[in-house]
Image (cartoon, rainbow, N blue to C red; front, side, top):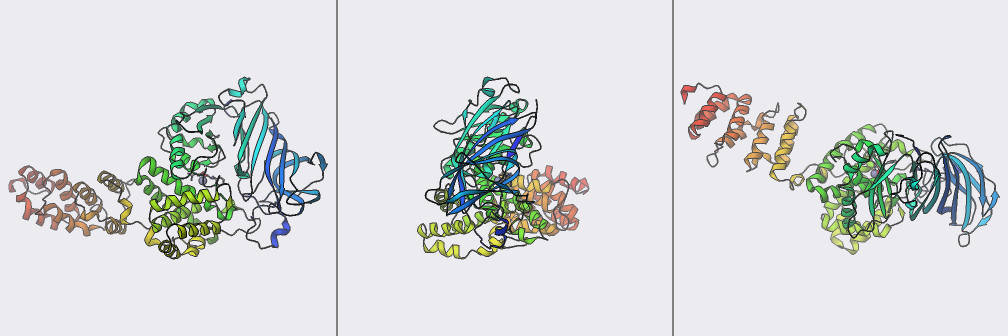
Length: 602
Ligand code: BES
Ligand code: ZN
């Protein structure tokens, strides 16, 4: 029973209400939904579902508790591939109109409300009986949900399990044969894209509890993958949550579990509330890919708690999450890890920006989508990398982590449970630093080229001087790490770096003046073997025979003389002739040999 799976996911990105909305230019309306969510929206949904495995259909009802935000006489839901059998309002059958599907936005389900619903009095219930594969949603509104789902295979939802207990597989009934009712509740208000269900032959194993913590962590997989999945994630999952709590605010969702999806799962991970979905490709066998879990955990604050109001501000989810993920890397594995992730990400950013050269609008951090435009077309590393680089830039500009982390706490606390847009983020940033820093910080903020960051196109980031490599990149590297860094560069799969890169490396990090001989050795190994970077030959020669610090140790002098000889034989022979007398006879004899100089000479 390796893979019985049904998944109903509720993708992010859903769209503006009526087709007639198309002509209304109101920036505050999500262009990726047809729902009239600014008029009326759900505060709670209860699902009552049966999973029919032989027909591969989920059927049942969704009961919405609706809240009118202004007088309104109809409600519009987004839906996709649903068959709607009936709609009831407060127990009575109601009319409904399921519109033909829009290619991106799905089918609008329009339900007239018998009388005008008014904001103060209009909490009503709207029960939609349906079956089919998925529902659609919008980000700007949040709500709680609960569910009762019956199935012959275990059922998971992005919520807290009420019954049966996680540890009791299928409530103690026969898996695949007997029907069990699973009850879940999600008491935290979340955007609907975080509602997800999975069912299949799956088992649970909790990770070790952290003393004094209210939340728990664990992993769900098919039985066959439990051993390797548990091993891969048990060390880091709870630590990530714990570290994140220290940096931001307490974890709010009570449970943080992982679920390994079948290999067709198209993402690395998806941060469904209480239950992150992950790809089985993270099972590297050496825990080297757990950073994806660190990323999804970070969404618990950035995305699941403070949420982007629509896809145009997606960077508020992914940019902040990436910034946070890398800070967790630093907390767990040291600052070099954080820097390296930015360096690796920078390459992905450049590639993504290049891929949109013919559609530069998607190179922007903040995107204005037209009604019905598919945000998936703009999905790339840009919101992740431009976003996290922007935040890193602000962090450094404003005075580093000591100043920035307290601001981040305030940001999350201020917008906790809300959906926001970039303007609100920026307004809060200013107001925080006006109160906690005053004139000096405001002047710094005023120096930011906001338009370039938000709406800039092209391959460059707005402030390259602050973001390109600079000497501080390696400030937290110890000398061994610098050695490894240089060795790695000397040995990138047999390809040598262009000479311009070598000059740039030297100009940035000044390896040619390092007083550490181990580093200088690696530096010359790299520079002297790079075609066209031979201008370092004189440097190397002087370093070897420096009267104040002759490199008599054979570990240093032999390889460097050899490489130098290949680059500039004349300079090498001259240098050697003048200085060989200062070297130990053993070294002298060997270098003579290395340089092909007759042995009798010594
Ligand atoms: N929320 C995303 C996945 C996602 C994006 C789902 C867009 C639906 C639409 C998730 O948090 C994510 O970013 N996953 C990344 C992994 C991460 C380490 C960059 C992925 O899947 O590659
Ligand atoms: Zn993400």
